Length: 466
Image (cartoon, rainbow, N blue to C red; front, side):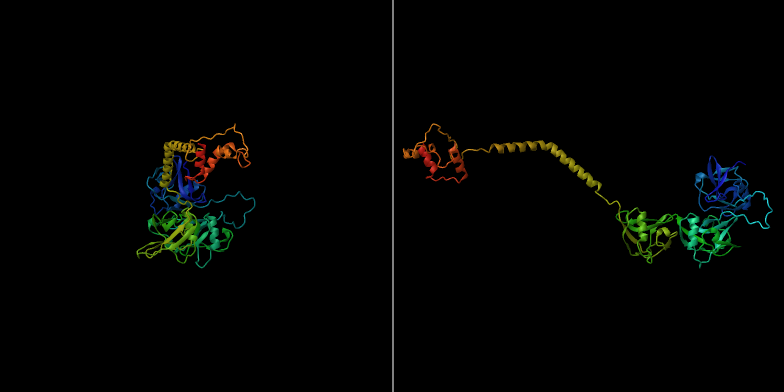
């Protein structure tokens, strides 16, 4: 009697996946519990005990979900339907069990005045629910509308325009914006007999019809009709559908260029070009998914062999394709080049080579630097020592001196002796008197072209001095 149960996965506590609190955690109940088969269940009214525990109305529907559970959080219960006294962990993946209970009746205090002749039907806030199709996508499937205790699918005429209504429904389902109407077969054909292709649960009979496709609230959109077992039902695809189509670029020089491939289930195949869809919106989206920059270029490749196959998307963007169509031949692939936000710099080998070269140069400077410096200093000093200033010519051993005791004699008294004895005893002809006239004469002669002739004045005067 003290068991704890809850219904999860919807915006109502009276419908969703059945979970029971066992062994200090919440665990989903497998659809094979209580001896049930996956495609056949007993009268759902036997589960009313669970609905009463949840303070809801009577049990309305009991069905298996299309999704699998995680093995560590699932149990199988035995005994009578709705009993949790004999449950055990299930190690194999199983379909969880879903339960829909009617909304609870609102209780009112005893009336103080006589009740009216007609009592209005108690109502609950209207709500929508999506029954996922065989693709198993979230936010895509058959629309079920619930108003109070009445729920069912919606009759749809393909001639009606439902974009405004579709946006309202996707917003109420918290699934983004409306993408497209989902063409579905007749209601009785939407219940597959193959257990491997079960939907989350079989859609309810048609009980509603679109009253105003431009309505502002769900109460104004639909009107009640007599239950119908056949007819076209309303299905939609919202922008929040999951999982999204995955893409990648292969065959290029990096991650930001190559042939576009998409993933369908567990396999990758080329994305075939859709010639009516022009523009770069699709390829911009592909570049963003690869975490690259904007698209630089794209071009179509040849179809190649006739057996080439791939997938095509009828929408402008891949994020709008809830399913891909297989193309078994003549698939025209597309090569896309995106901007690379992280261009390749110096290779690791180049950086290592530069570092080794710098280390080698430093080693050579340490070993041979001091020796080369000493040689340069020695060469500079030798060059400086060779710079000698003095008389240059045939005889570098002559010495020059000045007789400070010599008297200047008049040219009138002894003109001949002044010319013969010592020409250095005479004052210079110019007004400038030099202290070392012989040294200055030698420097002057060294700067001019030497004359080695036998009648040179230098030899004659030297002979006279001797």
